[in-house]
Length: 525
Image (cartoon, rainbow, N blue to C red; front, side, top):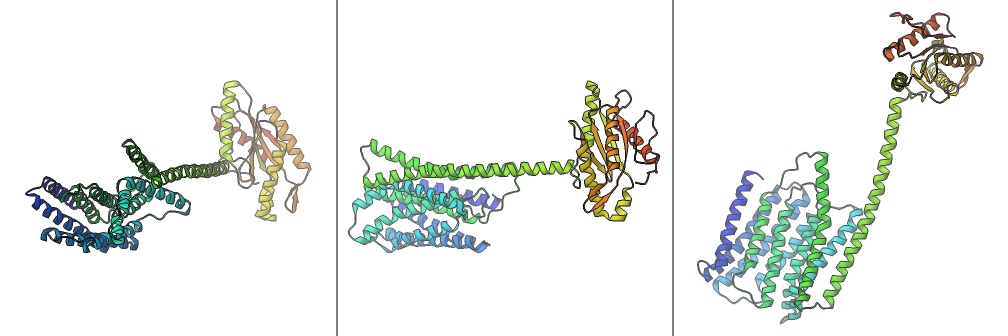
């Protein structure tokens, strides 16, 4: 709330407090209090009408502009009706029933109803049924409250003519309809802040509805006075609407964190769930009080009460069904995310061409194997395997054939190194690696068997066949000799280099102190 709005609210609050104190205390005289009360009831709705008209001119949203105009027309109708009634009061002219003032009062109801529903948040199809049931629960509960107190006695009292009878019912029914609409709009309002102060407008209209009901109840009880609490209620209601109009449009919410957004949405969900239940509980409480006072309800009230309870049960069952659907949807989303996470994890640690583990996973597995070797003394062998003359395949057959050759080589490696603990990886380019839970002698023997099998049979890839050979470096991790994995890699890589420069198509063992590859030298193929 900015400074101007705060000052307006303060002035309005002080004025309302002074007005209430004056009229309820009968100051300065009972006759003076009546005049002040009627003038206040003229001023408040006309102020609200002017403020709503000004707010509608500031509105950018068409629906909000129309809603504010309808609410403004409603306030204007009520204010003009009160001006006519004030004339009767001040001139001490006997007011007929119905009078011209009643026209303004009654017309205020449909305009207020239309304006309220234009402020309603558009619900999705899935939420429409629940919203309708909530509305029926609220309307039924308010009817169950109003019937024994106001509507029922008004119905029983009848009227001198059909018009007076209809008019006597119009006020309590109008209060019931508008109040139900207000509660529905508040329930359907989302957690996100609206430019329209819906809660403040709703509070004003509910206050007006309560004042109307109080006035009718006092009339039926024969306790009506020239100045009553209902007068303060009418003035208070329209002043709340006036304050809401002066605050339009409200600024949007500040950027919220994800956690605060969840909390906001949860609060909105609780509001939608608790509001109809609260009104229903109030209706049941009124029924209990009436029974205790020896005023049992009639068949109509019993029907309304049972119907509202039944709707509450249906609402609960639909909520359970909706929650089950949301749970299934959430489980499906979790499964999708889990699958996607697995796919991303696989992509991060595997080569897309061959499907083998990549250098990143290779380093991770070697580190774990070496750590285990230090703790338990288990042997870990590593092979570095490089295709000989792979450049010739690429240059003569094309890169697509080269990729097919690498994929076929990956399959041959996996088919040969398939014992428990074997890990085959593509280190990059035409170089592969194998981790084995074996001594250097076993690793060397298995490497030789693979090399010889590959040498003796042409490699088939796509529509091509070619005799492909490999050079292999073989080593075993020795915790006493190798300070870390990098030192171990250098020896095995040096063994691979030695097999290349020694004529290719051979397997060389890593040896302590074996010279690494000279800088800038890389054997072709």
